Image 1 (cartoon, protein in one colour):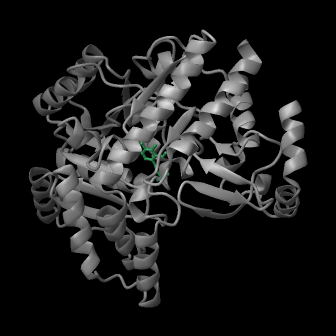
Image 2: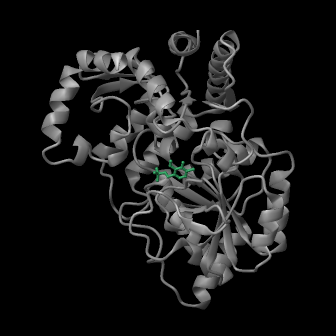
Image 3: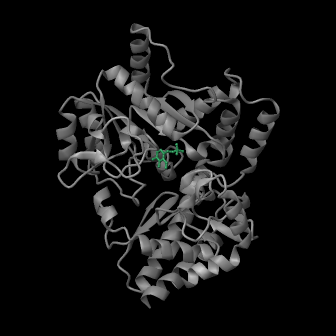
Amino acid sequence: SAEVDLFRAARPESEKLWRAATRHLPDGVPMLWMAKWPGPWPVYVRSALGAHFTDVDGIDHVDLCLGDTGAMCGHAPAASVRAISEQLAKGSTFMLPTEDAAVAAELLTERFGVPSWQFTLSATDANRSLIRYARQVTGRRKILVHDYCYHGSVDEAFATLDDTGAVVERRGNIGAPVPPSETTMVVPFNDVAALEAALSTGEVAAMLIEPALTNIGIVLPDDGYHDAVRELCTRFGVILIIDETHTISAGPGGMTTTWGLSPDAVVVGKSIGGGIPAGAFGMSAELAERARRSLELEDIDVGGVGGTLAGNALSLAGVRATLSEVLTADAFVGMTARATEWTAGVQAVLDEFAVPWQVTQLGARAEYSFRATPPRDGAEAAAADDFELQQYLHLHALNRGILITPFHNMALMCPVTTTADVERHSLAFREAVSSLYA
Ligand code: PLP
């Protein structure tokens, strides 16, 4: 409660805006996740640049959340802002292509290895579109996901396993059109036997996965897990979709390229637009050809995927500039080095106070969890959750001008995050841990 008092005293302007906003916005926010932060009211942002933002009370923050990866490119990166502003002045919505479209698709092809791309407004939209294509080309209905996955507000992925191993609705599944057991199979991450059993039913159109879980802490794949995934998908005719929305932290081409994976389709989103909405999905040549033939054969229009503003000129100007000038291979080297420093800083504090938590890094992203060893699947990771402890650590950090992602203990680095930014977190983290365990 001392931390809550600190927050209250420091943020009167945020309080004013919040009180006014609650008249027409539930919880005073335009999107309900924004109310998930610790503290009695949300922090209202005045402006942001690079790895920092300033709130309306004038407090500077090191942003280690970075819009939950939406700003992994850093806030307002100059090259993206320039390209987006120039395009905005020239018009943005034509439902006709601009030159940037082909360039952006080529840049994505170079990074992820699959050659046929379409653009969306979000990673959620990209996942939904691929699920439709997968059902169309396979004639099958079910989608297989990992337990404790998150792929956006995609109906099929809002499923989990109950204690008996049955597929049930996951918390947050508002207005599900049908019970998820009708659309979805769920297997634990890293469980090859469960995967083989599920795929061998012949009911699965696509396996939609993050190559490492990132939405329940970071859960890395066992050696050989992805070889097994690829082999089983091929054997049972299942389309393998790798959602790189978060795992792009592993490198310019995500885990797909860094770890040498061979998906049939790839999804990206969040940061690729340089701060404005953009998502994309890419297909292998074989899948793209199957999709084309299938639509032709059945004389199907494209109404089921895409949207009026998808692939708009503004998004594509942002994608082109961000991929070619901001989230470059060099930038990833620096981001990964900063994440290694952050990991070492956290580990040093854990060692000093003999706290049995572990920290896992995946390129530019790292996360600690309240257990001694890295989790092997989502259920293990979830069992270590401690909401109160997490709220305390996050609020403590926020009061010292450091933003950590809600629902996570995650830190993400952008191209201009500095060692000094990382050290600011290490110091605050030491203070918090020592207040609990010294
Ligand atoms: N895929 C993954 C792996 C995600 O973590 C998320 C969001 O957190 C999404 C897709 C959805 O992204 P968006 O909400 O931008 O559509």
